[in-house]
Image (cartoon, rainbow, N blue to C red; front, side, top):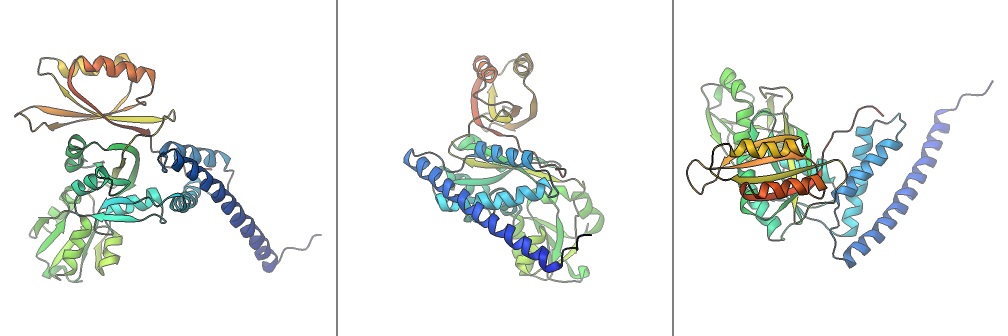
Length: 364
């Protein structure tokens, strides 16, 4: 009968595997640097969301366990983040200060090796990317409870940036304060979106408190840290950064609360075969215009995943329509669709085609 391995034997095996892992990562990084050199010589984008999608897809297909795909995604996110940082420093803008949900989305998308630059507002994120001060930006597009983020939608109309990727982030809102005593609280600070997501909870627990809207959840936490009679609704990370006490966790009215973020840049990625396109249109003012437009999507067998209107700000009671659908603007049936729509729309703007984000399965 074979002797069982000792703890020291097993640890020695782990050490040997670690050596192989480090050597393999460095071999991979050397090849990545060659890729980066080729891209730089052609003035091509260093970050390629279509390639990122293919890497995750292949890695998950290779995985036979016992490690879960979600854990494997986290590992490869950091490997790719470190590789990107070596190819060329890519700067990512987000609405700050640090600790905001946009900051969390940056880390979840790009890992921890790239520099993130906090901007005061969503508008500032768009401007930083459009002016070339930052390579990419991460902005909230819509929330599963509150719908579209107005500032983001308006900036898509007013700027030339493109959506090049997306990510969905679970949002757990926390109620925090410098004080442990809720009886002394007089006001609550937060961004309009979390306030809407927690509207019923606030009404039930603190109907007497003044509710004050601020530019971001991280700014709300900063303000609450300056005044013990104030509270903030923000993330756990905000509480940690600002030294606040979390008095209540997960206070959102709907348990499954998710915000979809877009990565914005100067151009859209190549097609992967599993893509989404975002666009904005302005219809001619006539009876049945919206109905006729929707028929074109049906006729081209294209699945709409979102349609939302926003006032045009040109004339009263005229609206832009923001539309997401499955497909890439390089697909032939999408090209045909756009040609048809040009005849019926006063204005069409493609915001970008990009890989569809799907959270990795917990299964191998």
